[in-house]
Length: 312
Length: 130
Image: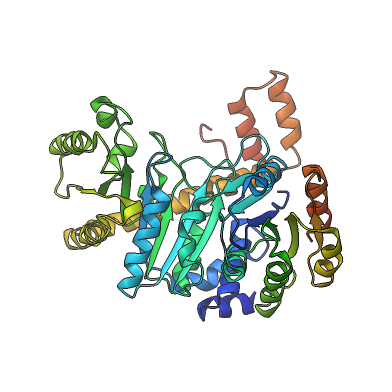
């Protein structure tokens, strides 16, 4: 573990990769590893890229990496793809678009499968971000799975969230709906050379006119495959970051992020401890036999953990 | 939790025929593995760098161009150079019978020829990944 930490902090690729495996799979030593590197985190700029499947998130990520590299910044990428709900397997294909960076030592790309975690990210994404951060990456890009309407976990993690949209996915009612459309700090209308791009642009602008608050998202047009509009987008991303910093919202975002990390671990820990109790199987049986309600079952498990009934 | 086997399916060299690689990727996915597919026309250097970043257990190389005798051993040698010689490397494609022993001697664990069932490949990976 010591070697892994030292290797990671001194920028060894293989140590970082092995450390990610420990963290991703909740292997023994994870807690020690994170405890050791945690003080070294907090320096990276966290950028989220989200949007529907096929919008061009991976291609856009590839071009954003290239732009950041031209600025001399090192980049870590976490590319999340879905796991099969049936076999538990996954095909992680986001990297296909990013292979031009495979030999660049300033770029580290890691694919993660969701492993049936909801919200658009893989379960241990945040911890992997910490590792990339401690390893000294200047910018960490998290590309979410292709999202529909409600997978918005990225917003609690990223300093700036880019929502990638494409023409032709729906009418103005889709734009007005709650969820993914609300979390954008920056919009990228990708495939902007296609029919409907202008309409999408004006609809998003119209939607934004009704947004209250001081920091309104900027809207950019990109054609990622042709490397069009990328520099402007990257400038827009950092401009957003600077506005958040200046407005004092940054503290709120940090607290929000810390709380969401803490909550995830509360849920995990209680789940793990409850299901590890000797009486767990018995409680499941009694609920199945309709002897007790699931709520009573929880109380029985909590009693087993030494936690008192909240109503007593 | 059962350990997830992570496999990189890669196509070194210049042929663009990736149906086989995609079929194998899909079969491994259906067997519960996490498969990283990097697309066609990858250099051995790109494949090895990717395998190390992704910390995969195994690499499946597909080559239909006839350059397997050069490219497959190159991947194994680069892995060893980078201290990742423990990664299980297997291959597939249009490989003449007389080349197979040489490839195995060079450190490719197994070669799957056209007609090999995906079950055979799955069983091989499950048996040999530590």
